Image 1 (tube, rainbow, N blue to C red):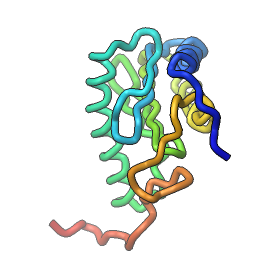
Image 2 (image 1 turned 30 degrees about the horizontal axis):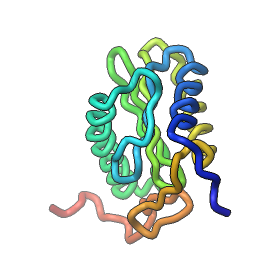
Image 3 (image 1 turned 90 degrees about the vertical axis):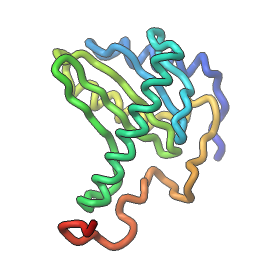
Image 4 (image 1 turned 60 degrees about the vertical axis):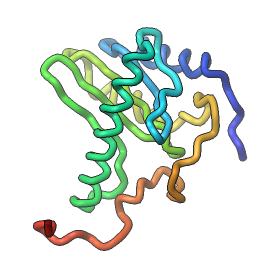
Length: 155
């Protein structure tokens, strides 16, 4: 079943609702699997979305590499803790990447829950049906595929 197409405005509305629901949340952005900004909450301008695209691309690559090396299964979320903030990224089943920033004094567990909930229901918020560049389906990032690396990994 193909999900219905919704407007970019409704994606922004969904991201604004996410930010408004969790005290301390500052902004939320959704990026395509190849890092293009699809939508953002009210405080995200084009410059911020572009910078986040670069940062999140690196975080996703790091998370996928860690999942492969540690044989930890599919990547679910990457959380970066800073002295005054947390940055959450999570990938939807079709490859879109949700990124949320929240203040350091906010309740991290609430945001982790809301991010997981949003990702689980993301298809109804996305403006287009996305297909990941690879043939991987169903939210699996491929982290479990292939033989387990030996430790230490040869250089």
